[in-house]
Length: 411
Image (cartoon, rainbow, N blue to C red; front, side):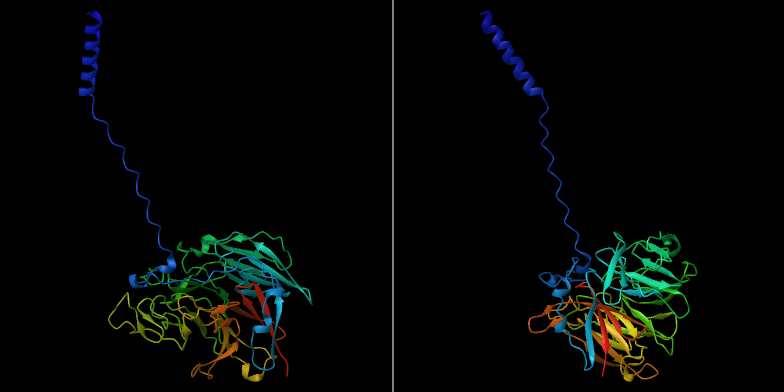
């Protein structure tokens, strides 16, 4: 009896505990993973374009041996010749030359600045600085190399003679805006001795804000900043006419408005303070699809010439040498790196733009071709910038193959 009474009490106690215990709280569901942000280059793409396979052309960030550069494929006008002047410099873009002949090159994706030394029959290169954020901008003046990355400005005093010189950090003086998209830069000193710097739109298409879609100029020490042009989406090259001293610049058209436009632009700055249209007006007077505005092109300075749809027009150079035939004197060269936002590729060449003395009646002609094979839409290189040597020959950088070509002429 005793044993049965004990078991019954224990059972009742256990039952009571079960009845009074609070119900177990179900485990909270794991938070859903956040959807990955769309890459910046997809901004402005319509839902109907979501299945598009178009995407930026991947840059080659490894060394391409000179033996693999298809020099024989490149075509030039009669009398002109291309040779490989330097190779093994991945990502080579803008070039600047020191008094002693050393050439400095900026890059974008690889984060380096190179120095190339001409030894006569050969060229050697070294890395000046590495691991910067898209240091595409290089300029040389008064014995100093200026390097401009997205978030840093460095000056190397006397670097051509003293390779190990430590840089002077000038970042604070330039007050760089923080956004990265379209803020890799081409920089140069103008005839007035000032440093010209573009700040691209931080988007494909948007209201850019007061710090972006503009060209500025500074004193060499970063003081005296002026905004000299607005409505500039993404210029990656400019130069000054040798006689008029007017500034000419390329500007990239927006993406995702179709294969055939808006075209890239070649603009002429006859005075400061002009508006070149972005984001409401593109190319030769095309109103934007996503940011409609009444009289979108009213008051806009339209381009002197359009340069083709999604051409990625880069460097601009006015030829002033005597090696090329006389008709090339003061002729403009434009490097078109080539499209990605187009079903059939366009550009991938260097063209000339001839005009009258007032800058009117521009005529575009092919100069260096063969980087694009239209039969299968394949590419072998992407020309980006020009640099004229004292003998009148012309250097052309190839970002894709990490090479520099020297163009000469002989009758």
